[in-house]
Structure formats: structure tokens, C-alpha cells
Length: 268
Image 1 (cartoon, rainbow, N blue to C red):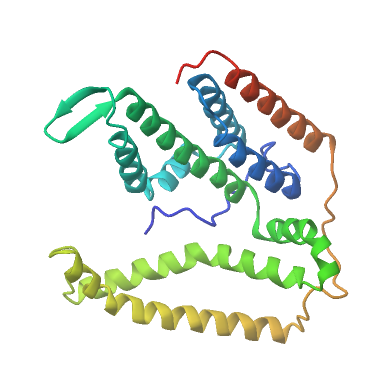
Image 2 (cartoon, rainbow, N blue to C red):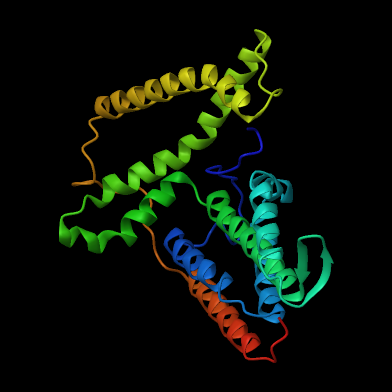
């Protein structure tokens, strides 16, 4: 539970931290799309190089990114294994019913690298953007939906609060599991069904704690006369700067590079 980094913000003064949060969200969506538009090893290597460069520019410790990968490593391995054995034609290795082909190896590598790149570039957004800035950015980006009478501010607030309380709930889960183990609860032995049953004493107090925190937060917001987004002002106004324009141009150049790499001879 301590290795889950979703929703954590790492304060720093890096150039990535100072980029407008609206630009970061739009560039993240663009970059995620770009990750799945890599069709050979040249374009894939360019995207990986860009992800590593952004991570270094964020000045967030690498161990924070590695923690975010630790949680989904099993998913990456299983997905890669499925793709590895899904192309039995022209196998380069065969043992019993197991057949591995060049196409299967290529697909396994592409799937693994794409998922890892997706997690890392998504972590950059949460590590370098505070919950307040994230709320303002989401509200500004969804502002056109007000034409359809969508409560944009409330939706952005709920999304940010949910993201903000992920680390809190994970910490609470860790404390409850430690308390149960100190009382003799065994959560690590037995088959899958036994382990699931052993989690019931953890889930019940966790849900109670989550509802209590939600109620306390609602009461605190009501005591401060919170009325949603109508008539609210902001202490920090979001403005596009030269730094944001430079970031957009850089991502556009990466897109051009990926397109050019995809036009190279078929190496995948």
C-alpha cells in the first residue's frame, strides 16, 4: 500500500511544475495518444526518450516513478505474456504447446513499453500539479459544457477530491491491515479464496472510515459556506506564458518525429 503513488503531489520548482496545468492536461492526452501511435522501434524509442527527459526535467525522485510502476508490474507481465504467445505462426522457439514467434516478441515488447510509458507520463501530471491547480485546470477545460447546463465546477471538484484522497485511503488501509495482523489475522497464507475472505475485516472498517471522512469534509465545506462554482473568484489566475508555448512546440516536434519514424522501413 505504501508503494501506491497515485494522487501524490511532489512540490518542486522545476520547469514542468511551472507549466500551466491546462496545458499539461492537454499535452498528457496528446502524449497518451502518441504512445499508441508508435508502429516501429524508431518511433517507440523516440517516445521513451521523451518520457525519460520529461521525468528528469520534473525533478521528482526516480524512486517515486518506480513505486508507481511497482503496483502494475504484474499487469504488464501478464499482458506481455498473452501477446507473446498469441502469434504461433512461424515460431522461432517451440516446446510442447508453447510457440514463440518474432511477431509475438515484438508485440510483447511494444505492449510492455507502452503501458510503462503511459503510467510514467501520467504520474508526471499528478507529481507536478497540486490538487488546487488541477481543479482549476479541469474546470477551465470543461467550461464549454456549461452551455449544456453541466455543473463543471462540481464535477472538477469531485474528481480532484477523489484523486486527493487516494493516498489517504491507502494509508488508512495499511494501518487497518497492520492492526488486524497484530490481533493475529493471517492475510498472506492460503489460496485465493481464503485471502479474499481474510480481507473482509479490512474492508468493513475501511468503508466506515471513508464515509466518515466524506461526511466530515462535507460538514467542513458547509461551515465555510461553500456554494459551488457560482460567483467564486480565484486567488491564482491561470495564464498562458512563453514556457507553455515552448512546451506545446516541443510536443509538436515529438509528434512530427514519431510520424517520420513511422514512415521509415518496417523494422517491427
